[in-house]
Image (cartoon, rainbow, N blue to C red; front, top):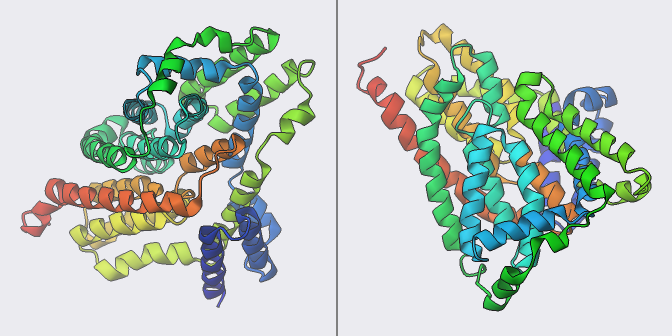
Length: 434
């Protein structure tokens, strides 16, 4: 009964979030409170196990950093330089943004990459009088697809790499990068086709942008130098976090606190905190509690274990089922809980005599990472982009995002299915491998 109740609350809450008739933060929090009232778990469980405070704190810290730095005109300066480099052409800009985001997400990680790109793009679209939505959606898709290519690009890959010792950085690169490149090119083509009519060149705006002097947007004051210094230190910390063994959240919180202390005489901290998008933060808290209800009642575990019952240990069937279940499920809830529940299940396949589990690991990585594009809550990068966009007054509609996200996920999973079948599963079907 607990499991059925948790599923019912989750589905009803999700329906109201999609319809957007009621503030989504209120809906998510109400659903979470109903699960608590039903005794599915305790407040201690919610605060210590289910709410991802790393994501909440990271998002809050970046909102603070961006809010202060934005007052110096720095983001407008960078945006104008980029606009002039691509001669103000909206479609060309979309393609450049997609490529840079995908590369950054593969070499750094997708959360770090979107944290750096989104403020710049929001200012840039404002200058060119272009809609922000196509660029924000493209950044999300590119970050999740690009992050799939490497061990450090997306949290699910990091979790798999930690669980399976022989899967190194090179292993991820050689096994996943080829298909990621194909999916990225296909997705970029689709984005250009879908948005080309709304990304129209305006000669007058382009001429104005080309005539502007980027340096005129910089407010050269102590606030500028303090903001740039702390932002630079924070970015360096993001880049070096695997070496420093300090997580992204700690670096971001430290950067935000340091900048608040340094600018206390220039800006009132209360003013900065008022500019934080609190509704977005509370929405994700409520959503984490909702997903926690599914975890607490064993729903996610049962989905993972059900894979074994359905496939009866057949590797090709299992690999494709993991790919699609991970891909579709990750579009509904954050992919991290699903991956955490599925890793021990895959390890149990050794009991079925499977000596080579690698196809299953690649199926899980592809499904979880690519499936994150299905909705605004499918991956951490989506959460961060939505949060920063909301703080700029450019909130992303949940349902509108899904109209683009779901087809992109289905397209990605079809291509990934063909890739897995041809590269890993064909020999098993021919009986050449036992």
